[in-house]
Structures are given as C-alpha cells and as structure tokens.
Picture 1 (cartoon, rainbow, N blue to C red):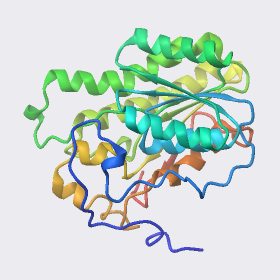
Picture 2 (picture 1 turned 180 degrees about the vertical axis):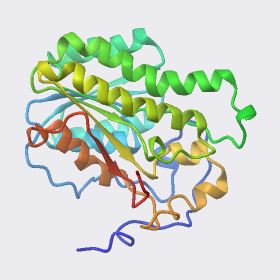
Picture 3 (picture 1 turned 180 degrees about the horizontal axis):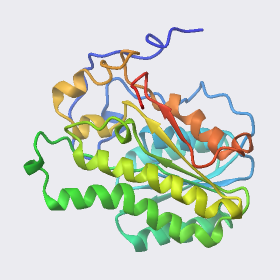
Amino acid sequence: MVHPQTKYPQPPFDTPMQQEPGIEANMNPKPDYGKGTYKPADKLKDKVAIITGGDSGIGRAVAYAFALEGAKVAISYLNEDEDARETAEAIEAEGGEVLLIPGDIQSESHCQSIIDQTLEKFGKLDIIVNNAAFQMSRPTLSAISAEEFDKTFKTNMYATFYLCKAAEKHLGSGSSVINTTSVNAYEPSDNLVAYAATKGAIKNFTSSMAQLWGDRGIRVNAVAPGPVWTPLIPATMPEEKVKNFGKGTPLKRPGQPVEMAPIYVLLASEEGSYISGATVEATGGRYTI
C-alpha cells in the first residue's frame, strides 16, 4: 500500500492562474483522471449516464471511469471545447461511446435539451451526475455582486433541480442520481460564502429527493469532496491559496479526480443498491461533523 500523503503531488504548486472556468491542459501538475490506471469491472454495462462538467476535473474522471465500466456517457460542459474533445478522445480510444453537449446549465431550457439530446442519441437514461459548479473566492460579502451570487446558485443548485425535473419521467427502477456537494456543506470556507451555501442546499436536496423517489426505485446520493485539484482552483482562487492548495488537510495535499471516480461508480452501480439519501465524504481528513 502507498502512503496516501505521498501517492500524488503535494504542494507547493507552480501552476498558471487562469480565467474562469479554467482549462485542464494549462495546469501544472496535470490532474490525474485515471487514464492508464483505472481498472474497470463492467459495473455499468449498457447504462446511459449524463455528467455535467464532464469535460475536466472530477467530471472527466467520472465520465472516463463510467465509460470504462461499460456506460454510454453524455458530457455537458460550458465552453471548454479543448478539454471536452480530449475527454471524448480518451473515452473513444477505449471503445466507449460519448456525446458532447456544450451550453450553459443556468438555463432551464438547456437542461431540458441535455436530457432530450441524450435520449435521442442513446434511447434511454439511467444515471445523472450533477457535478458542474461555479465558485469565486471573495474576501468580503460586499465583494460578491448580486449577479455573481445568482450565477453561483443557478449553476450549482438550480441546474441540479432543472435536470432532475426534466429527467423525472425518464428515470425508473434502478436509476441513480449523484450530486456533487462539498466539504463546504459541513465546514464552510469564509472566502466561499455563495458556493458553500449552494453545497449545503445540494446536500439537503439530495436527502429530499431520495425520499421522494424511493418508491420508484430511484436512488439519490451525493459525494462531498474536499480540496480536489481541478481547473476551477487556479481559475477562481487567489494565487497563494492555489500554490498551497490542499496542504492544510491531514493528508497534506489535494485529492486527485481519479480518487473521486470510484465513489461515483459505486453509487451508480448495483453494488450501491442500498445506498440512498447518503453523502459520501472524500475530504483528505478534513472533518465533516
């Protein structure tokens, strides 16, 4: 067994700062999404999954793992075409099927279109991963504009609602919805007020939906990552925080997307059949109580 503190790169990092939403290709070190190392076991054979924010970061790792596990994947992303194409090429190189759907999930009509395009391409829908998120680090409340606060909720929380609502009649017994919340739902960061609020809302939404859809055999769960090395970090946080990102965890480093993907696979698969309404924390030791 490898010591978890030294398994992946430790800060300090020297990575270029970026404009939001960030490009994975420009990061140093590059995030690890499991290419060449993820070992599949046909856990999602013949399933169809939608992953928002699937072009990079955690979403890319989940899309790649799902595809290797046998799922057909639809990847929703904003405008990061370079990252999306790289993800699609990695999946297709492994014999997987992928559909790329660019657009802004703040729009309810676009969320409906994501469902419609997936059904048109693959004929059914089994899994939704609500993963895409927006955040900006701000030192004071007055530094957060009403427009930015609104964008944070529309991207993180409203889109989760929009997609679940649009998918409701297409999901059935055995379907799985997985929402990405955060350690910020338990231990909110003072510089991420809007983001942390959305992540608390997503956690509660997950619990409510598990109760609402339980009789239909639809499981709804969440994953709460701690600091994970994704393009969102150098695109939305101050340079000093980026340089030492994840250093304050007991494992002394940020998580890598590849370390998150198996959790999503479990929650999407038959092996997770008695898990619903749960939030699985993967925080590098940061407390969630």
